[in-house]
Amino acid sequence: MDKDMVHQEQNLIQGCINRMASNSFQLKKWYVALVFLGITNSCQKDIDKYLVLYMILALTCIFWYLDGFFLKMETLYRWKYEWVIKKRICGNTEFFYDLNPHNKNMWLVDDGEPNIFRFIFSKTLIPLYIGGVLYSLISICYSSF
Image: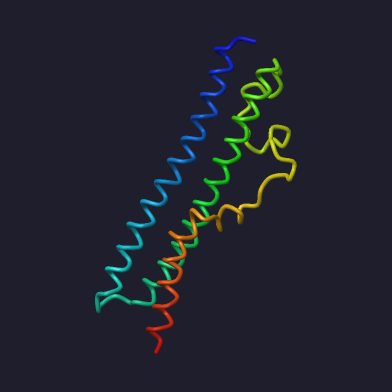
């Protein structure tokens, strides 16, 4: 097997990994910007505070799920990258240039595809998104009194 072809395959998979990491970072940037925009607007008197707080809560849930999805996809592509390295050394051409991250034959673990909630409630995502949930819920409860 040609080493250049193996390197091209690895570069394709690495490009997918980089894209998933970039998407996750972009989501975090947009989330922080939109939440701060919502918080500053909720302080104005002529805007419905409940509407803004519910929008912050909805944005938090949506962005949290999407961030967990991109983190899961990045992990699957990392597993695929490791699988390619191990199999191509032995001369195996099975699934050559296959970029499907859901291919169960290419995973290094036998547990099956990981549940997305494992990534949503990971130690890297909870600190960012739990703040938006707590702020919204506390503000909604506090404002109702």
